[in-house]
Length: 213
Image (cartoon, rainbow, N blue to C red; front, side, top):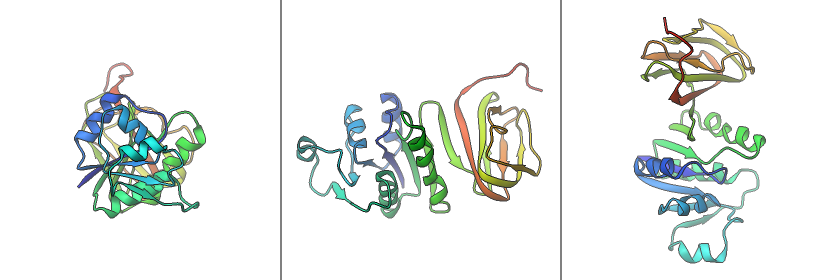
């Protein structure tokens, strides 16, 4: 099953929200993410979190069995919503509206990819990027010129890429700008890592730096 989790960060385009919902079997809103869903005309299957962003009108609009209040202060509303989606049997989870506004929130929200390693195919999606954790190896069958950035959270060892404009071979990658803004040259491209938490940002646009060799 596929789930869409809508966070309470900066809203992505309505077109993208509707597209992601159309590709999903059910939709979960993380507390105030319900307002993003409503703006796109989406029906949510669950609203999860401490619910401090919902008003009386919101409760009246939501049907019975839709609202799940979880007041645990040691986890964010987004963490709660993702856990809810996984508990319902989702094997693929797209998370959106998780960035913008505050850099600390945007970076912290990406931690759900690391914390849920091995629990399903989780991706964070916005209008510019689809972000995933490289858990061993990822294959990218995208058109040449598709932008790819690699960001190591801490230290990653044995980072190897193929099919990119600038490839790495058994490289140790630190938390730095070193892996930012590569591009696919010869699909399918691959990214693999032996150890560490490596985030892969796959661009939703094409940007060629001159002629690809």
